Structures are given as structure tokens and as C-alpha cells.
View 1 (tube, helix red, strand yellow):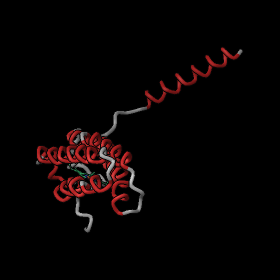
View 2: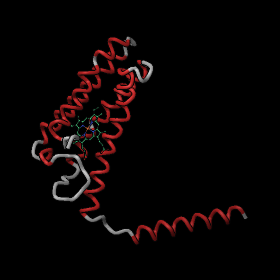
View 3: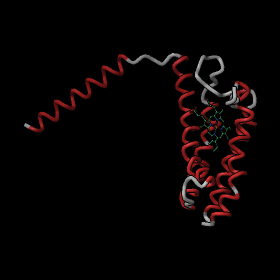
View 4: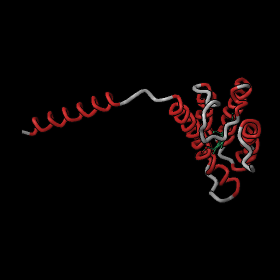
Length: 162
Ligand code: HEC
């Protein structure tokens, strides 16, 4: 009895998938551009999410925790490798997308990739400092680390003041 129910349920699921696949049309270039934009912004949001507590520690808003600082910096180093990849995945200049990415990114892909590499290197260096467990040593390295975010934003992101 139970077995039959499960089989029926499985068939219903199969039918549902088949119908969805049938109904699904290839995404339009506009939809692909939106998807590419949302995906790259997701990478940056995760960068911000991981940087937040570290900046909070420096400001005294969050208690210093060397393990969290090291862990988050390692995550940022990993995420940094996705930045150039998400921009070469699709050039969205021709599309109307909600973005702060400046078109010049696709004219200077090597420089852009270098700035992502600088972030990766700085994040690893910072993680090394945090591994010491010492608050002053760790937070003393934050300016150099965070500076690599700002360096790229200055060149390639719409000025937030505007
Ligand atoms: C290699 C260049 C580069 C580096 C390095 C970089 N960013 Fe960005 N960031 C951008 C660009 C370009 C955008 C705009 C993306 C868009 O809107 O399509 C952006 C957008 C953002 C956003 C907004 C995301 C959203 O919701 O739309 C946040 C937050 C952010 N960056 C945080 C950071 C932090 C924190 C770091 C450092 C840990 C960092 N970024 C390093 C280029 C960079």
C-alpha cells in the first residue's frame, strides 16, 4: 500500500519535471544579463557580509575574535577568485541592468583581474596576521586589507556619492 503510494508520488514528480522542462524556453539575452548581474552582486554581498564583523571589531562594535577574523578573511580570499570570472562570464554593457559596475571593466579586464588578485593576496595576508591571535597585530593590518576593496571601487564602481 505504502509502496504504491510512493510510486504514484514519484510519477507525479516526474510528470511535473517533464512538464516544466517542456514549458521552459531558453532565457533571452536580457534575462541572461540580469542573471549575470545578480550573480556577481551576490559575490560582492558575501564579501560585505564577511568583512562586516572585521570592520566591527576595528570599531569596537564587535568583540575582537581572532578566529572569526581569520575565517572571514579566508572566505574573502576564496570569493575574490570569483570576481573576474563573474565579469568575463557575460559582458552586460549592452543591456539595461540595475548595476553599479562601470563599463570600463570590460575594456580593462587585466587590470580589473589584478585588483581582484590584490584583494585575494591582502585577505590571505590578513588571515595570517589574525592567526597570531593578537588583536593589535591583526587590526593593524586592516587598512591594507580594506584598501584593496576601495581601490577597485574607486576605479570600477559607480561613485556612491552620486
Ligand atoms: C576587482 C574589483 C572589486 C573588488 C576588489 C571589490 N569590489 Fe566590491 N564591487 C565591485 C563592483 C564592480 C561592484 C558593482 C557590481 C554591480 O553592481 O554589478 C561592487 C559592488 C559591491 C557591493 C554592492 C553589492 C550589491 O548588493 O549590489 C558591495 C557590498 C561590495 N562591492 C563590497 C566589497 C568589499 C567588502 C570588498 C573587499 C572585501 C570589495 N567589494 C572588493 C568591484 C570590486
